[in-house]
Amino acid sequence: MTIRYSLKRSRKRKKTLSLQIGKNSEITVYAPSFTPIAEIDRFVEQKKGWIARTLTRQAALPAPPAEKQIATGERFYYLGESHPLEVFFEPLENAGLVFWNNRFYLNCAGGREDRRRHLAAWYRKKAQPYLSERVDFYSRLLKLPVKDVRITSAGRRWGSCSHDNRLSFSFRLIMAPPPVIDYVVVHEMMHVRQKNHSSQFWNLVIGVIPDYQAHRRWLRDHQLLFEF
Image (spheres, rainbow, N blue to C red):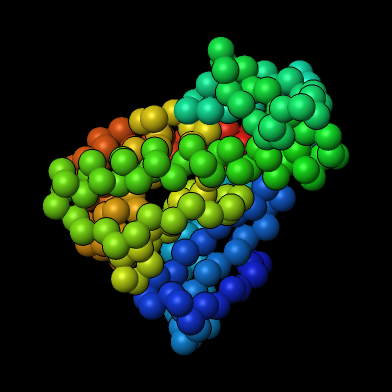
């Protein structure tokens, strides 16, 4: 089986190769700028079994949900639970999103893009202290120094660890249940010790999150629900 993929090179990557499969079954390989094509092809060949299983599983999934309009009645996740949204406009009140009594209230006069901006800003505001606290907890527990925690707008990449041990997390991660969030935090922090996804790396993750595979599956099965 010939595997067709798109290649994205980056000077910021030092050694790590990674592979992602998009919602339309497109395969993307991320590589350092200097990596030879032969080495990349070997990496893809090694992932052939995983790629086949993932594509088969994707084909069996139901059609992705329609794009959210960010309108009254739609539901959005927060810490693993979905809650209804109510959109209104009250000119005498501050514009923005409020979460109260298990319901989102969005005061906004604008269209979908303005509503999306307010929603994303609220998630980012909640994600920064929550994720910083979890990183601090595991940093002390595991004695792993972390320089910085940054919140991004990444759509599919839940987190990353730079070569100088700066961590980044998508604001969408705050939509996941706390145990799943902890798995992603530990995953990225273990890259402080091991800058790859070798068996040694996964053994480090298992030592802290023994059931990490269940959390990976949860993210895979729910990621489309987090998009807006």
